[in-house]
Length: 96
Image 1: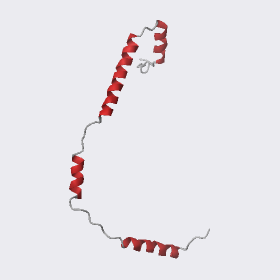
Image 2: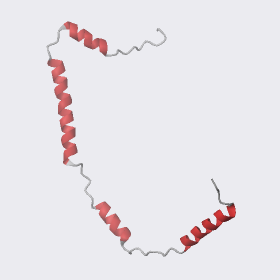
Image 3: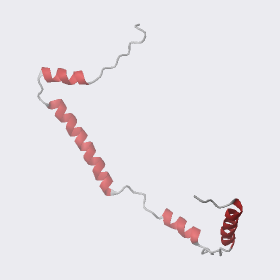
Image 4: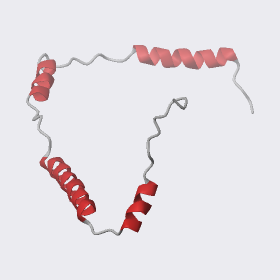
């Protein structure tokens, strides 16, 4: 692989920098900032209706699941198996 010497590399870099110096400035409209701020302030700040429906559906499903678990006719054996899955807090510090 043949590499350019640093002098040749610097020539290409200076050519690229000279091209950047030839860029023409673009004038922006005077009221551009105010029009952007106007659009941002007039944007509705409401939650979309489909997100509200999803939240209500999730809440209803959680409540329905709680009622089902509370009112289900489980035998004593299945309740013991379920409570064995749930960890219990051990708040005994230093065997006091």
